[in-house]
Image 1 (tube, rainbow, N blue to C red):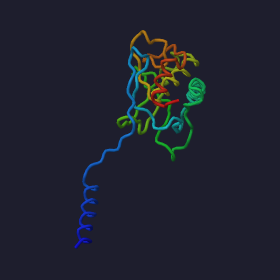
Image 2 (cartoon, rainbow, N blue to C red):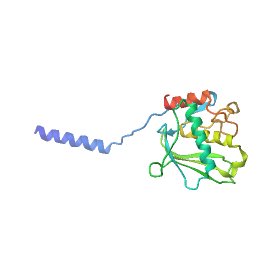
Image 3 (cartoon, rainbow, N blue to C red):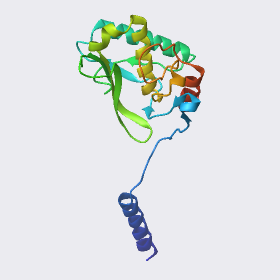
Length: 188
């Protein structure tokens, strides 16, 4: 009799585990705002995310991202960088494209859950290539990396000199405010 009761209890427990929905979520990082000089958004789950180049991507864009990657790694005390990989190991990719009728210069498009980018693609708009210098494009690429690492666009003109200012132009690299936001996400 006792063994039968134990069997029923175990079966009930198994059924409960299988039927009752369980939510598993990663950490949610909050904080920041225009007045703080950083805004937090969903980020890649890895502080060294893998990516691959879409076939046919111009060397110009590869060089700009290489420079941006070096800047980011150095300016975050060797904490954050991208790792070039293959299509077989990641769904994240980077490409140069041409969208002359669009207003965007570069962007990150992603699929997210509550706090993470599940997959992303970074795009550079070749139709805008002549509007910025090579050095500016490297910093624009670094700005886009900021999105992958969890920083959102700033809109207030008081933030115009910050890396994450939402209008392309004269970025000077990671600022102390950007670092505060990145440290909140990555804990370095």
